[in-house]
Length: 183
Image (tube, rainbow, N blue to C red):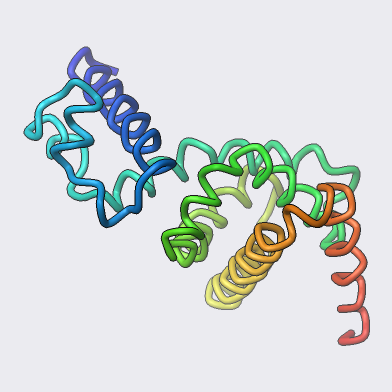
């Protein structure tokens, strides 16, 4: 990585950190690029060298936390659908403020977009081979998993104050086992 690339990456990190500090306190629509740049001690020009818009920061933040999702899945006792809830709940818990901010700002739909775009790459880090020889079938399968992840995350955020992570993981795992009735 060149010095210029390192500087750009550092600027991205500072901008994302500044944005997230503001995002925890303010609504997404009320946060301006100027405000983000000022909070990061950078210029607007530097912001636009790093990102095209505010939503790109959210994508960048997802990319920064995605390795935690991969780790959570890789640490499961077995790679079964029922266990996936444990990984998702653990992942969301680790980044709870981020997911709560998305939900509070009605941006939680971005979760599906992110998983749609990144699960194939994540699959390569978790499983050693594609799920299907048919690329189109695999893409539909991964999109289905994205929607499932999104709904699990939404449910966990809704029940966060009512259930422990362990209770939530068990509830979801127990419900996913019911898919056996479709085989």
